[in-house]
Amino acid sequence: MTKEFAVPPVVFPSVGNPVATGGNIQQRRVPIAPFQPPRPSNSGIPFMSFDIGSAAATTAGPIGGGTGPIGGVANFDDEEPLLDELGIHPDQIWKKTKSILNPFRVNPTFHKDSDLSGPIFLYLSFCLFQLLAGKIQFGVILGWIVVSSIFLYVVFNMLAGRHGNLNLHTCTSVIGYCLLPVVILSAVSLFVPQNGALRFGIAGVFVIWATRACTNLMVAVADGGEEHRGLIAYACFLIYTLFSLLVIF
Image 1: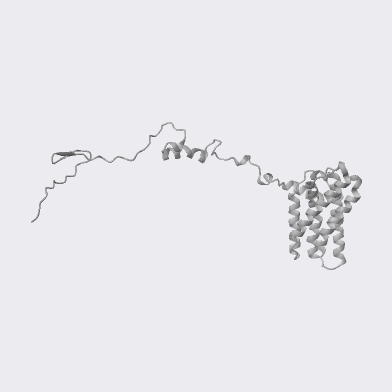
Image 2 (image 1 turned 135 degrees about the vertical axis):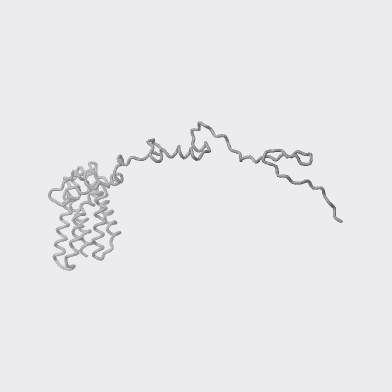
């Protein structure tokens, strides 16, 4: 025996309209949209307006082509060249290097402003020619440059006494630029027989060239060196003789 239940018919009411079912009024609430904060009309901060479109429109101007100081397009015409920002001046390096080519008329005016860009370039050139000769001496040459700079700096200031105004930076710059004859010697030695008097004779000429140029510059760029020219020349001769021994042997 089945039991029947009185089930009222189900009627789908239209949205928002009340429907009378069995004497009871049932209302279905219309789903509302999620909560959205009010949009301020005059907001100075773009990301606080919760309006992506307006924020994009506000911020796209300065980035794309605005003229404001923040986010504007940089004017690269007013920027200095990269080499000048790094302290590398090729024209000055060329003038200083060219002044060493004539050992009898060395121009000391270019060497008043010392730098290390030119000496580093000559150091790398010297190492390259030694590498072409089958000698890997990067560390040895760099160590001798440092030791030679400290040696000549100490000797000059001991001779000049209180009147000596030579600093280590200027001393290293002068020794590095006067390394040019030794660099040329290392390039010439690639075409000269290994064993022979000719090799030693050419090395002696280049050592005297480098010694004379370095002595004239040391006396000119620092005060109190004229009366000790002979001793300074002897120290420079020892320095560039050591460098030439790397080329000969």
